[in-house]
Length: 470
Ligand code: BES
Ligand code: ZN
Ligand code: ZN
Image (cartoon, rainbow, N blue to C red; front, side, top):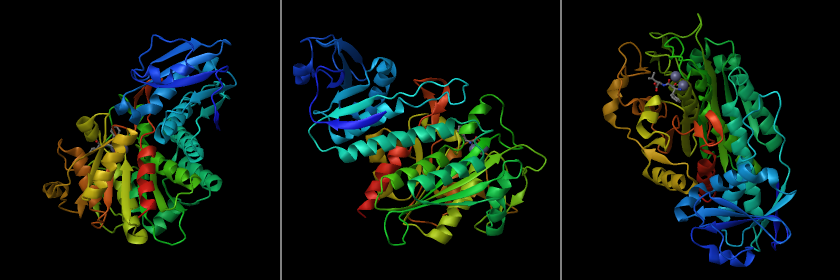
């Protein structure tokens, strides 16, 4: 699918007319009949035919509150009707603002996502050209919408990929290829280098798998100075069996999605590099497979970590916080960024707390919390604050090591995990942890089983844009 701009709508060809709820009158001049059976409810669509037999799709935009998820209306219209579209289709966009146009393009791109990548016969790619018809200057919006949509599709493909293919090494190769095409620097530490540099927690988690762990560093420098504005650390567990503290088998196949945080980090660095944003951002992906094997790390083990702190393992299924702790320690020791954010499918507890509606957000920084909260609503990738009370510190006390990886209590799991991570941030003032276990992967209108949501790309893009002017 390609996108271009046209100044004038050609009413003799196919076109889409986006319409706000109960606002048919604003577009009456380009409708073939005066009173179609259509009220503009969100994501409703109706096909009318013009004088030439051309197709005119009325698309309901609903009310203002629906703007945050506008892409869904365009995605659905496209999926439902694109088989009948001509070689080109127009969107009447004179009444749409930049944000709406961007979301419209994202939605059309999302409709191209092919979930059946591993089927032996593949669906045909859709090749129509889409013309956005408006007299406004939308060059930047067009480019951005197209790239955001592509990036979301690329990270969805990663998260939905099977774990026998999507090994830590596979993520490293993806990243290396991406860095070459989008022009940023990618460095991959393999097992040997992880040993020599002391990524002991990552190594412990990866010990039980034949697919060896990696840590991936993706550096995008949009500014000439050296200071790093933001480090993003992502959890890249390519399959989480639970390790020796093995998980029940029901839904275990979904644990291929335990690298959702890593996918966001990989995707966002690629995206901001393609958009040439005026910021310096580094992504750190800590990737391992948590497998069951004679060589696996055990409950009861005491392991070392990048920070030098020793960790008593209570539960090998609390592996995400271990790999993430090494990434965070590396960032605060060696990069010292202005902002430090980690993103991880970290706990089942956050799913029980917030369901599929928002990521759990942990930070001491009120301004960051406010910014993320506002952006989250705006792009429909919401966050909800959870506390980092000192009360929870004693839960991570270990008699024999510096800290333990699980409280052993069936309460406040997401908070405990966040408190564990906090211990490796050296009290960084601008640290935030996002637990995306509930929002990264779930039900969707286009798949029978759970699949990737693409959560996080729009949230981080908008946040990183706020850093350009700081
Ligand atoms: N990867 C899981 C968390 C998860 C659960 C992600 C459901 C997505 C959906 C994580 O590694 C895990 O197993 N966490 C345990 C921690 C516990 C053993 C302390 C959990 O939350 O139950
Ligand atoms: Zn786990
Ligand atoms: Zn996990």
